[in-house]
Structures are given as C-alpha cells and as structure tokens.
Length: 253
Image (cartoon, rainbow, N blue to C red; front, side, top):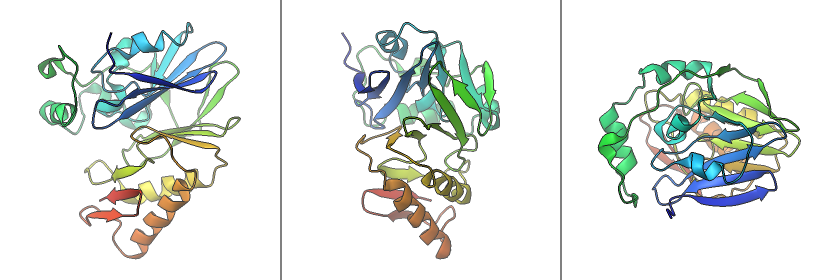
C-alpha cells in the first residue's frame, strides 16, 4: 500500500489529503455536502488521489482548482466534473506559460518519488471545465455553501474559497507559511496586495493553505497585508526586488 498520501480530519465532513513526500507538501481539501463532495485542488498527479477521495465519500465529486498550476490540477484527470476560473481557461488549452520540461523539473525536485513513477510520462492536465467560475459565484454542495473569491496575484485566475458558516478560508497559493511566489511573469504583485487586503477583511476562524505547515495563525492575513503594504510604500512591490523576509513567511518578487 502506498504512503504517498496522508489524510487528516478537520471536522466530520471535511478532510485534508496531503502529499508530504514532495518538497511542495501539497494539501487538497475534501468538503462533503449532502448532495455532492467538493475537492479543492487535486494535487500533483503523481499518484491517484481519486482512490483516497473514495475512502471518504460516496457522493458525486466536483473538482475545483484554486489555480491552474501543475501541483493543483495533477489529479484532475480522474474527475470529469471540474470547475475553473474564466481567466485561466487558456491554460487548460495548451497555453500554459511554462514548458513541459520546466514543469517536470519542479515535479522531481527534492522529493521521495514513489516506486514506478516515470517523470517522462508526466503531463500537464488539459481539459474543458464543466463550469466556468467568476468572482462571488456560489458552489452549493447541499447543506454547505462555498463562495468563490477571485484573488489574483499569484496567478491571474487564482481563487480562494470561503465557507462563511464555518469561517473556513481555503487560500491556495495566496497565503501559506513559507516563501510566497510572486516573481513569475504571470504573477502580479500589486494585485496580490489587493487580494490579501480583501481576504484579511473577512471573519475567519481557520485558514487552510495549499502548502506546508497546516498550523496557520489567523493573524497571517494581517501580517501579510502589512508586509505587502510596507513593500508598496518602499517602492519594492515589483518583480526583481528580491526576497523579503518577515519571520515565518517571505515574499519572492
């Protein structure tokens, strides 16, 4: 039996499926409703996440990615019903800004790959979403309502998902403990600041990131907002200004 995935419980109807053997320490989140289950991000696609999800729900499953990067849509191939933001549909049609060789380099970097995995067979997921998402759209899975928040910055179609009734905020790559990547040509540091300011104004009980440490303090939203505003005031909120350290997180511009 593979130990690639680790499953943890948030509450009776919400689980975390993690890939700790990879340097990105990817987290996907399964939200079970009364009618459907929503899988937020499908991981790297190195092993079959569908088999793990089926241990946790018998519902029809909807997959949604916080954004269309290889480590968030790798398992989409197992889920014919998936949603994506309108600003990244072109990335699902072969217009992704990195080459296949660059992506393969990220996948194999500093990780304990499972036996039998062949990077030469690795493909960036492509497909047509069954629903195109826009800011403030609602995903109703039966007894649970999830709000789509368009939060560009890390990528043009990046989304956070907010479950107001529980105070859960699933932040994707916008917020996590570690180094925030805002240096790619497809990133937008100023939009990143505006997105952080937006989510920092929400009433939140728990922040759930897509990478690394799951013990994320709610204060991270305000700490990051202050950091981005400081960079803006110093004229450093632009590509090429370097990596800026703020204790338990840093911003790479």
